[in-house]
Length: 319
Length: 300
Image 1 (cartoon, helix red, strand yellow):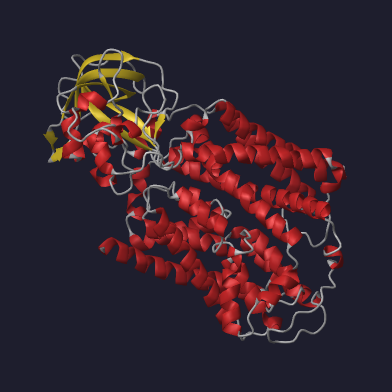
Image 2: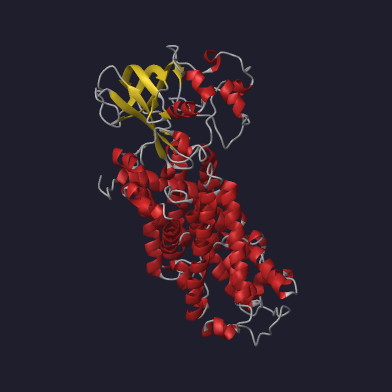
């Protein structure tokens, strides 16, 4: 049997299956993000944070449970939150945590891994995502924001910001009418924002589902055995794939689970690395942060997630 | 031009997607793609998209996002990006929805590796709910939505988990296993594979005449007479993308005349010989005939 044999009918069956399974969760995520954008003022978030810096970072990593955002949405959201006065380390922690530590992601991961230890995979994903977010937040805590943010982003901040947690400042960025907007207007904004998010992210989901369906139906799975059965190689291969596919965290579990030959640890690496760093995030991060920080984030996250998942894989194999 | 990009492209995209989701739901074709637990999600998503499309197409005030400099939607900011998004979102889905079949081609099935022994998959599988004492012993709740009973060959739900749970453990298997009008026990391929791994379930089928359907695939093992073949079904955990081909072996009186991947109905006696150190199910067929595909081509 040759290594590649493409049949459109098989591709279509697999492709539509992934789409049908994932699209409701993507839509749910978009609607929740849209509602948060329309109904939750940025100042409210800064008011929730504890005064203690470490506690504030931990709370920021959990904020996705209350304010769920997909990764694209969270990058956009932190621009708004930083302008609203959210401390930068907390904003970065939220940006890293929200795409994983979220009820929508928990639901979709549990659903996708149905029959394959769904609770174990969901808990591991959320806990690992939380730890990654807190780790990044603590790592950037003492770095001046001038070294992290793009000059254009710095200039857009309203006045000289103070360090510390009581730094929330009035908006002044065009959102003054937020409170004055009626419920009807906010509903319109919810639909508007949800649709834009949905169309943007579905673009990547369709591309990802196409690649996954091709991989599933056209590539001879037996040839993948050397990679899939090697713990270290399988983890790194799935992380590279997560980077390339640039999927939304609310649907990536449906893609991950379709790579049947790969072990759970490799799928976990895919599910943790993808939401915090992929091709589209590389560009989105670049619009907010300086290049050195984006590159450091990529390398640091890759190494840490690969090492942890590889170690986890060895533990799981020995139990 | 602005209204085309802000209003019509998103509205039409949502409308097309909604149409695809609702059509597949209404025509009951979803069973070939995803497990029943997800069907309602598709219906709700289709209806919500229809509503959103209506907002865009009927309420022009909604469609003004992405004109803002600060808009965070990378593809929505540029006209080229919006056209590209529109094409990528419409074309693959429309093509796949138009030309998709209900089952996989032989090469894809072969590439995934046909499983005839589920011992290696036991930890991943949700155990099937058979009617009978063996099923009652499985102790899964009758109305567990995550574990629907296996469908019968015509796609309707199998008889009875509820019946099974009210059946005394010492009742004869013949009393509770669903039967065809010819009196044959109706089973699915997965039932036989499970039975091979479970002594109590094996006793329910060993030596009994059963009737089952599946797709015909050649078998190269112990097949000197050429009359042995695999009866294959795709078993999905979640969706067709993760479906795994599973098969029971069939020994027919003569080499099968049906082409590879044809849907056939097999009637025969079940045996559980040990081959290669493994207990496997073999159907000693008395009748093999070509049949129509079932409503749900996948098992779950």
